[in-house]
Length: 131
Image (tube, rainbow, N blue to C red):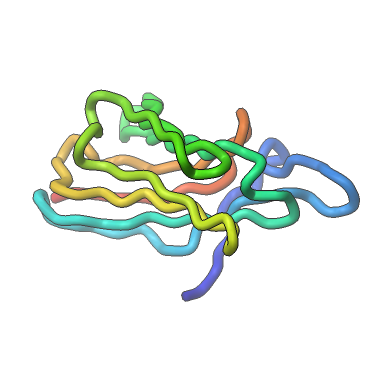
């Protein structure tokens, strides 16, 4: 799978030590049908992945942001916004510095740009259209 760093803002790199710390998306924008499932992944580099919670947010076409939830650094604790509870699942693979958002039974209102975030810094995004 081709890795692609899509974030170009200085806010996307958290300086730590010699190298910048970053998250990158691992897939391109997609269009899926209502009721389908889709998985979004991001990968962290240059920091201890298990030390940080990963939050997921999405930006709708009108520019509004919605917090979807989080998964703890160790991956044992999660929290979900009511709009995605029971349909979206967050997971982490700390040995590979990966975070995943598994979406099931997607709805048209799930059409958005999805962001994987660490702390307050937005680091990667994935576009999803449900039509």
